[in-house]
Length: 230
Length: 294
Image (tube, rainbow over all chains, first blue to last red; front, side, top):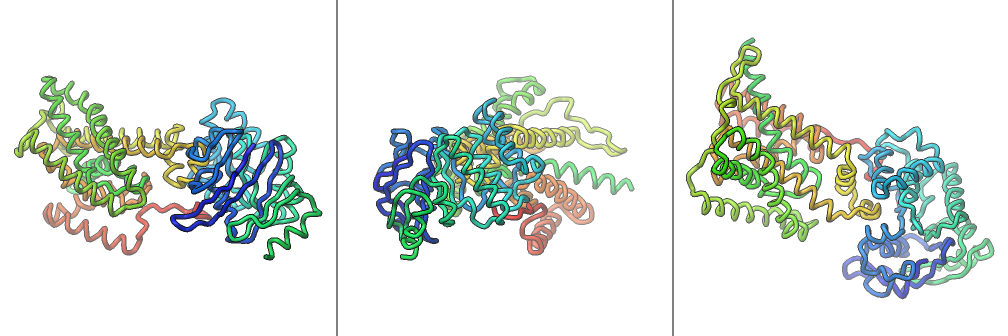
């Protein structure tokens, strides 16, 4: 579904991510782990085209998208749930959802209802400005927005960061449900137990480089924690 | 009592002129954050469009009705060319944009001087706008009433576009968070073009309206641009509601001060009032409350 071949990226002349290669097979979840400042978010931004890849190649469904603009990648089937529960704060919850649905006609508006079924708490908040939602509600909105584009793959950046434990569980369940429904997911996550529980494959980053990789599952937890402690 | 009503009417009339001048700017400066010093010259272009249309169409009523959309188009197209050729290449460099658009303003003024000459020209107002209208016992020039309704129409149309259409949602989204908008499948560059076209088009429309009150000259925009910025900043950058309140508030304030002093002194005092107001409330009249920065 998605392949990165020796991708390097950064900000200006500063290179933050060095020679990362990974492959996300169709219908699976790939977890990228690492401590703060390891370059995980920057890597995801390169996948989305929000940072240009200075080196290497990004292939999505066999096509080279390295030079494609972000909105073109999204229209090809990549959806992004950024870090920090981002939403358009001045738009209402409904407008946040409509904004995506508008681009997909009646199919988009049908998917709004499906997304609201997945996160029923949002149904009562449709008229409220997204800037006034709690962190957990905004994260649910962010995932709902991603689903409305009918994506083939979702890129999730720390979906459980800074969210109260009861809501974390709901979000975990939603992600697990998405993967079991056949959606591919590339996820950055620091919560090792959660990530390995649903990931088919993982990669650990430190100082912008890959330091460990392997298959998911609880058994990998020790080696991941060891790699993160490096 | 009569004097108070007269001041109220004068203030509302002045406010609607300010609003029309500032409305386009509230989009390009307020929403996009572009300090476009050539905004006044787009008004000038709208005004000269009115003059040109009047040369082709002798009936002043038809000329006015045709000038309004054509003035909008001329202003909008000039804005689009400026955005594509210059401003989009200077994103995140506001000082460069400020200087470059100042240069463009000078070029456009000189161009107008070369084409139409340094002397002012006039577009004849239709007969039905020449007399006064009786409002609350006061006699008000019909042109001012027309401009009031034009301003209300422009605000309503812009509000409807921003609030009720997919395009409006895209404009508001792209102006709030570009990365998130791109990641939502929106071409933010495309949205920039449309937003700048709309904002500059409204400037063109305001220019057509200005011909009903003033002579058309190459420096028509210079006098209006400062007022327009004043309204947008005092209203709260990015807030359409704030611009509306600020335009009428400043209009009423100026009319009130003018009554007991003079026009120039009123202008100075309004400026001072805005400076003091912004010291106390730097975010302007209307500021948005959110739980996060997003």
